[in-house]
Amino acid sequence: SASVALAEPTHYSPTIISAAKACIDKLFIPGLIYKKAGIMLNNLSSMEHEQLQIGANLPLKTKQNSWIQAVDRVTTKWGTDRLIFAATGIERPWATKKELRSACYTTSWQELLTLDLQAKAVIPDRNKKD
Image (cartoon, rainbow, N blue to C red; front, side, top):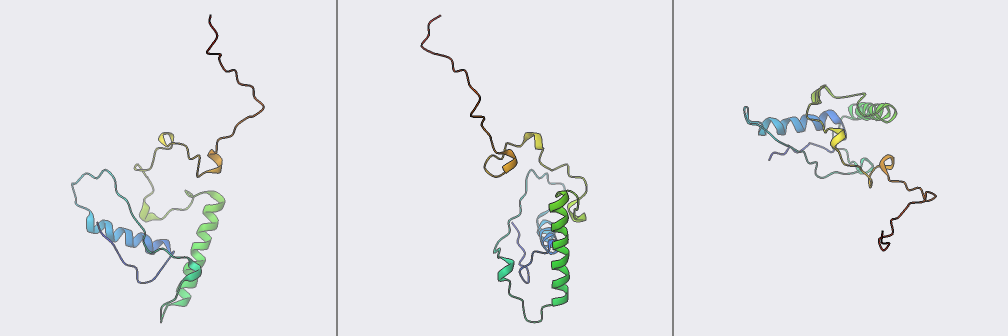
């Protein structure tokens, strides 16, 4: 495994992607066939509780925050595949095949099961002899 400690808490995607790529560079062995890999984010905290470091570049932080908010607005309005980071690749042959994915009944309102209580179901009588 590999890890990278960030200098300060961030929600700025390019910084997080750079850290992930640094870990991949440490672990990747050319010629080895990989079946699965994962990334874990530790020590997450709310933006509301962010403490700036002494000497923090406030104009840069403001610009990064504005940029992330703009990306969030676009992805909220038009979907997550409208804007992508070049580092994640344009083609994604590794992406999950949606037709093989199980339903998300407990996490997605769009996939929540609904029942029609007005419909009358015919239940076979198991005690009836033919």
